[in-house]
Structure formats: structure tokens, C-alpha cells
Length: 345
Length: 284
Image 1 (spheres, chains in turn green, brown):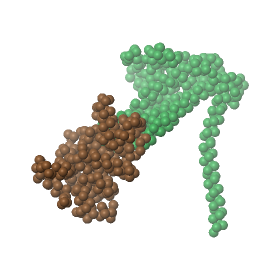
Image 2 (tube, rainbow over the protein chains, first blue to last red):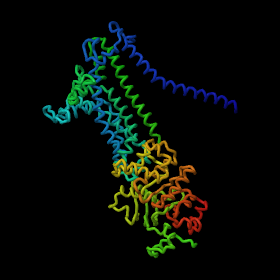
Image 3 (cartoon, helix red, strand yellow):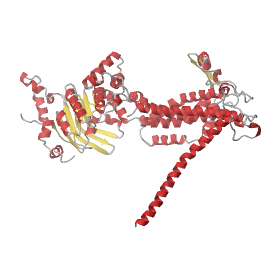
Image 4 (cartoon, rainbow over the protein chains, first blue to last red):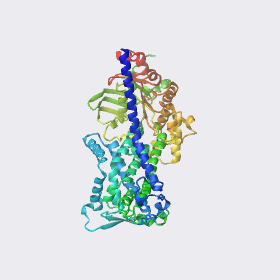
């Protein structure tokens, strides 16, 4: 008996070790690919070494320079910069956040705090999850119809002015190829993610907090506003930032809703930080402005540029985009860790 | 002294004239001589198809402590939560019968549940401070009630903390997080938070079950102190606790009120066999 057991035992232990190895390899696979990709990009962007170089396009220069961040587009790769796309991305993400956070959080609060459990709410929940899986190009086409053209409802393009403290905010109707169209489209795209993340954050707030608040004589609104929402905010913010960093990388829907591929000005003509204050009236022109975004800029440099050197400029631009993405994700992790320490139930 | 049941006490109260001779002053302080504060009549309660309470009728006098005892799942917590309508937030619950606070049916459509819960406060089994400062925890109730005056808020906080015997321990750190306090302190904070809205009735759902003996005894002392001004109804698993702190005890079993009387009677001469079996530890 012991002989058979011994043989079996050895085989079982061998299987166990093989399984562990397979799992380890799976872990490393993704990481190794990412590291190879990033290293290749960095080398190419800094002109250290070009693994894909053929003939004249050999990368020998450092393309990751300050002028890349401050210059506008140019047909000369040496002088080409991506400043318009950086500002364009920032404005687009800001507008997207302003649109998607209130709506997404509102929907999540309704579903978690108010909705009764019945077939309708189950149906809505299921379909929000489904929407999160819809390809982004579909949202792009939806945005083109609903926001850029507004179903052809306005025969001739017109505009309405909304009086604000610093002047008139111009809103074109239909939105056309403006930042508004892009922001509305991206909002639709990330709304399911924001809703689901917010729902989870709300669900993580212990029921005992709601009970405590209600038992003191708070109304449902007071309970949600003063207790549940503040307690869920770290989770909501983490989800929002992760959703927004997905929006930053989106290219396809932005092309469809008409971001410009060649543009030499920033939205609202605000060229530097200080002009946010000194040219405040330019802020009102931002939503109706034409724009471009970083992934689109990269796409154009890679595919549509006559000079092959632009492929190297694109590598440098990708590094900039990735740094911004990693920063955003880092902020999300920081918020989660920092606040969850304070909220240790 | 002759042992009297609660029913007898109530009956006697009705017969007694309002003004009592000087010699009976001591007797007049006894809780049973107080008017009825909370009363239920033929109270049935359902979780969906499941009936949790069967025809509960009992009356609790003002400024007294009533303990609800019974084995797990007997309905005592459910009963407690009907008294400030906290069961409303559970979906699919139904109620039949009447719950009266100050002779007013709290389930009538004229009653604002927010008003009711200010009057009938609640302390939960697990302390549940808000993830805010000690000050903000207590000030929350008055604030949502519309109190904005900073000085008055401070007065309320100090008064509530003193009433909950917590002031000396926390007076130097009112603005630090309530979550950093010990379990016993957190529970007294929750009591202080309830007191801050000036309730008349305080419901306590096993307030000391998660606490160590020292903290438990502080809570019990506190209950004893609070009953001078408040009507307290407490659910407890601990029969010694019920015997120590309460004036009246109700024994629940399988959703029914088996016996209700003065704590002394119920523990010394229970009328029902089930009560006797439970308090002597034969089951439960």
C-alpha cells in the first residue's frame, strides 16, 4: 500500500508544482509584454535605439523635448508639438467629467437608495452592465447622429447664448464638430462605468450608517447627502478617475464626432495656464471650439504624415499620453488608500 | 411587601387619586405610577409572508426602563423597531394593530416619521458612529433639525456628552474622529447622539452585547441615570442585565408576548412555565 501511495504522492506533488509554474507564467506574460512595449517606446522616443527602423527613418534624435509639449503642429518634425492636443484632451476630459459625474452618481443613488427591487430595476441594472460592453465606435456613431447633427432637427446651424457672469456662453445648435459633441459622446461612453463604480461605492457604505442617520430623524435626502455620499466619495472618485482615463485613450468615437486632425490653436485660444485668468472670456468659447486630442494626434502622426520622422515624434507623444494616464491612475490609487484608511468601519 | 403584577399596578394607578398624601411620595416615584408613554394594541407584524409578531399588547409607563427578553428570533428586536418605525425601511413588511406614543397612533397617515424618530430615539446593537468627528456626530441631529447657531450647537454637544457620561473622556478631543474611540466609548457616543435631539423615548437594541464587562456596567449605570428623564425600552440577551436595569420585563417567545410584569415579579414568581424555563436557563 505504502508503495502505491508513495508513487501517487510524487505525481500529485509534481502536478502541483506544474500548476504553480503555469500561474506564474500567466502573471509574467502580461507584465513582460508591457515592459517590452514601454522600453521600446522610450528608446525610440529618446532616439537611443530604434528596433523598427528602416533606412532613413532611423531614430537618432531625442524627440521627447519640452517643445513637444509647447509647440503647435508643424510639417517639420523638429518643430512639431502636441500642445493643442494636450489642451484639447484636458478640456474634453473636464467637460466629460462635469457631464458624466452628476448624471452617473444620480443614477447610482437612485438605483441603490431609492429603487425598489423589482423586474424593472433588475432589467435596468442588467442593461447598464451591457452598455459598458458596447464597442466605443457605436457610441461614436450615436454621438454623430444625436449631438453633432442632432437628428437634422435644426435645418441651419444656429446658436444660443447663455449669459454668465463673464459674458455670453455660446452653444451651437446642433453641436457640430465642437468639444461639446465630444464631451457628450464620451460621457455616454463612460456613464455605465461611472454608474457601476458609484453603485459599488454606495453599497460599500454600511447600512448601520443609514440606520443611525434615519433613527436620529434625518430624512432620506439628509441621510444620503450628509452621510452616505461623503462616505462613498473615495470609491466614487476612484471609479470616475478610472473611467476618465479610459475616455482619454478613446480615439475611434472622437474621430467619428469630428475632432480636427490638423489644428494650430487651443480651445478658446487659451495657450497657457495664466491665460485661464487673463483671458477668462476665452473660457466661454471653449465648449463650442474645435479641438483635437492626444490619441488622435498620435494616430495622425503615425498614419498620415509624409515625413517618416513623425513616427518617432509619435512615440514621444505616446510616452506623454502614458505618463498622464499613469498619473491619473496613481491619483485614483492614492485616493482609495488615503481615504479608506480614514474610513475603517 | 406584597408582590404585585404589572396589571395590578396599572389597575391601581387608575383608582389612585392624582394627589397623593405626603407619606406615599416614595411610592409616587415608582415608574408604574407614571402615565403610559408607549403602548401597542394587538400588534401583528409581517416580513412578507412570514408573521414575526402575534397580537402584542403591552404598555410602558413614562420614565421607566422596560426590558424585552427572549431567545434569538423571538421578535423582540422587531417589536422594538416597530416603536420608531425603523421597520419601514425594510421592504415587504406589514403591520396590523396600533402603536401609540403619547396616545397617538404613530402609524396613522398624519404622523411624520421624521418627527417621530426625533421623539423616539434609537441606539443599536453595534455602535455606529458616523465617520466624522465626535463633535459632528452629536451635532448632526440638531443640525439637520435646522439648528445653525454655533454656540447653541456647542451647548447641546457638551450637555449630551455629559449626560452620556462621556464628557470627561473626550472633552480634549472633540474634533478627532469618532472611529478612533474604544467600542464602549463609541456606544456611549451613540447614546449621546440620540440624546442631542431631545427624545422622550430611547429604544436600545442590545446596546451592551458587543462590549466588555467594564463598558457594559458603565452603559447600565447610564441607563439607570437616564430613566429619570426618559422612557427607555431595551432589548437584551442578558437576563442579569434585564434584572439589574429594568423596572418591567417582557418575555417574548416565537413572536408572542408570553409574560409582562414588573422585573421583580417576572424573575421571582413567573406566572408562565415558559418564562420560568427561560429565566432559569432551561432553554434559550
